[in-house]
Length: 223
Image (cartoon, rainbow, N blue to C red; front, side):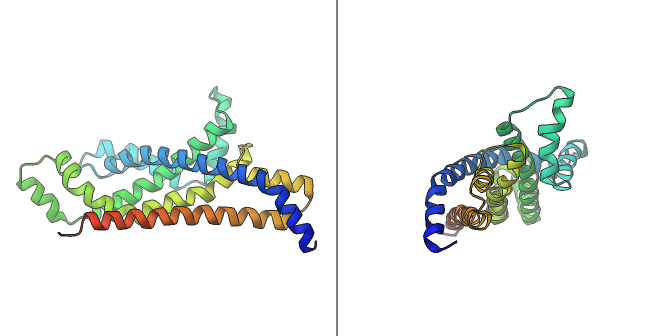
């Protein structure tokens, strides 16, 4: 394939691939929100001093960190209908991505909470704060600043993980790329184009990560 043919191929494929990239972005953002909703309470439960509350959260984290995302997608989309629970491809994909990312986000936040100096806890208790008050008002604000890089990395990885949902016929960048290849029979340039789009999306989220880190650092600098 010469340069002219390659340019024509990419120009023709661009609208479809950019539309697929838009779906990828929407799904990733939705999964990010779901992951935060699941991961934050799971992290809190992992550090509470009452064991019966820690165990369910620990089981959730262990299960979704210890099994492949692809298997989780298959269980949710193809397995659950056998017991009467059915999801559309979009719902199943976002649910699986949210559950998976929530487990990783919870570990990032839990590690950050444990990384806060014990003196902060003692100082909070000396002021008469209860354990939940000490966690919410003293420890979590510091832990969030520590956890921002690790949590951001997990969220950025969602951009790449969305490529897996193509296996359950969820329309996004990888699925539309495969469909284009089935028509054009030009896998190399189209897969490279898809990789570049994923890379650019990841770079955008990395920029947001750096901005968030700077904001947290400025907020906690002494005045």
